[in-house]
Length: 88
Image 1 (cartoon, rainbow, N blue to C red):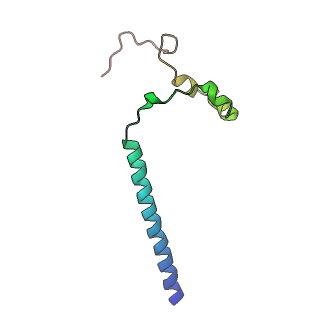
Image 2: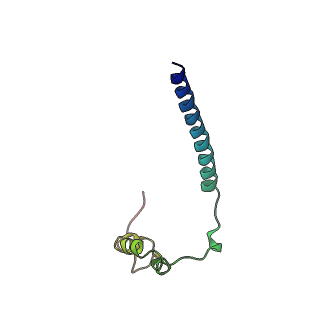
């Protein structure tokens, strides 16, 4: 019976410790998310700089539409007829 209570106490302590760690981790992430970052001070990494270190990931990315969804909007890249379109 005494061992059972010891196990319950240990499990409860571990759960409590896990809850405290999770609380502080969430607080840190919340602070990082809510803090604006000035991205203009970071150079833009082109996909060609990624391929040298990550060829496998680059290849799978390049085979998807993700590579086209991050390009600058232009007459060539925007596909669709938006003439006489309106937003409700």
